[in-house]
Image 1 (cartoon, rainbow, N blue to C red):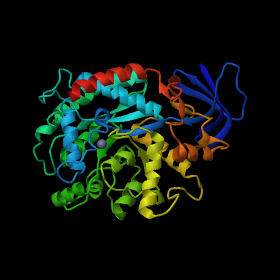
Image 2: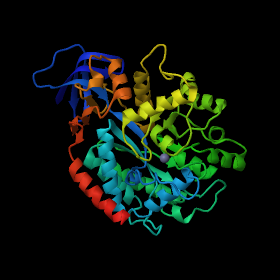
Image 3: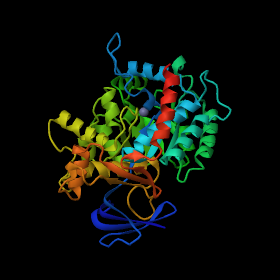
Image 4: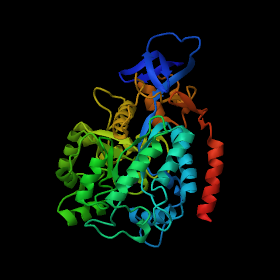
Length: 450
Ligand code: ZN
């Protein structure tokens, strides 16, 4: 048993003072507010639950900052995708592991303690299956084991190059599987995460453009009750292409053709009309938002104001990993709403005026649901928590929600310590294996970019 004591901690019911947390085998077995520290307790000033990161493509961390150069024509998501495909084509299993470990180190340093890895580079450079079809998943699980991050592995079903079962392009050959191969991939992926303390495998039909209606339904069944993630409406062109194919917008089509429920996470539900917003909010599915990446790629702005008013559940993801930080994702989410609606504190509520609190608790609940694992400082949850550096100027003379608003809106690298399964993985803002991971990352990038 390990004991922790916090001057202030954010519990499921709100902020509490003098909180003791007892941990056994990585799981919280007691939370006691308003008490004194036990002499053996580790003591810290401010504790928050670790944040789930519900959408990542870890390998894209390796191209962060490399696509910020204007091409010959107008740049867009689709020109970025060409750069990404060229980068993806250079990554073998060793490079995948080196880059993923770096991304996971940065996630933990940035306040994320679990990641949903939406994983689609399955095959070798020629497009052939590795001896183990889940070889890349094995490497992602090894990175999770090395860094300590919780892993919900989401192997992607990718069959087609566009709506209406178009043939895949050369750049997509490493991603492609039929349904039988996908079922085998899932089986081997489950074996790959079996050694992790709370690893989980879900399914991820890539997008409506990359599967067909029958395979989408089949993939959902293969989830066996676990998470189902899909990219849904990131780009205007995607909405137009879906309409040309089916006569419907993507979110409408999905709701008319799939039993969307609390198992589902609709990533980049960026472009929805009012009816789609209401349907998603009522479904219990999570809107997977990636505000930094969506801004970086010029996707558009999710209408969080109306989605929240309808009672919708959201979570955040670092997606392209161009910059990894939980607080900055939440800040970007609110700032996009302010710019879109020309208003302030758009997501603050009458019953919870602190915008930081609404953002943090919303993303915690939605992220936990989307990744299939409980999150929060509560009995039965994994002991995943973050402490803030209490001497930060933007936390001076604050309490409770004021700490969250300071952290999210005025914070610069405020995370001090991070614990996963009760084990300290970040100390003084740095991951305990950062130096070794960064050295391997530099070698891998040297190979890839040479
Ligand atoms: Zn994505």
